[in-house]
Length: 238
Image 1 (spheres, rainbow, N blue to C red):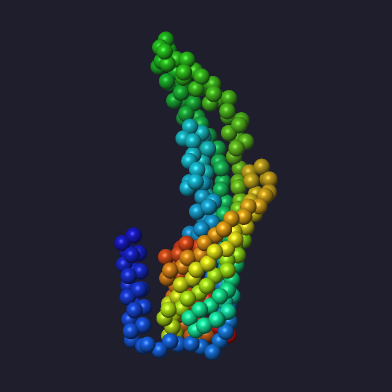
Image 2 (cartoon, helix red, strand yellow; image 1 turned 45 degrees about the vertical axis):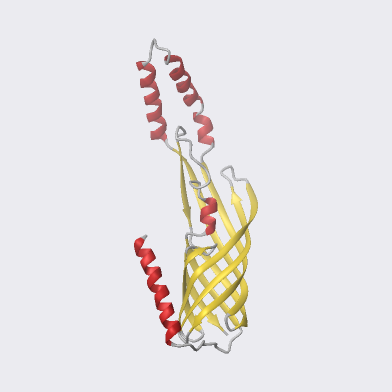
């Protein structure tokens, strides 16, 4: 964490040096920007992760394993002013939760309950552990039915504004802000398909461009968006 904070501080300091060293704002004679990128740790990862908005029942022999692809996105911006662009970002990402029955956990739990039942024979706790053991055995088939794979395909459309604060011939510093629509195409563990929709924010505090006058690479972080906390790609102005 300290290294990440130090890196951000160095980047911001470098930006201020660029800004003080040359007061001219480089403005290429272009009106349009197109680009494509890839990102990790996205807003949809937060929405779909089973460990954030729900708690697993420790007594259930079920494990939830979450995985995801990177987020792939394309964008277009139209320049209204040398510092201001308006446009649209389109992002796709696939997330998956595998719900797996743990045979070893189930057997260990049965063995522990059986041992406790034997240790409490003739005491007031015998009936309690007997019922617990029967309950656990009777729910074996039900827990098996709860297992499977749940997939999420997200298509995110985000209108946004891009603000360029520092612009040089081969470097720029910018921020992006917007709010859009997340369309989640979901396939449940029983193969039932349905669609969900919700708003999704786009807040990118630190965006850096580097390269040629028109063709550049970019990198973004300190970001909460469908594109990810770490987002990089390539763009072209024309």
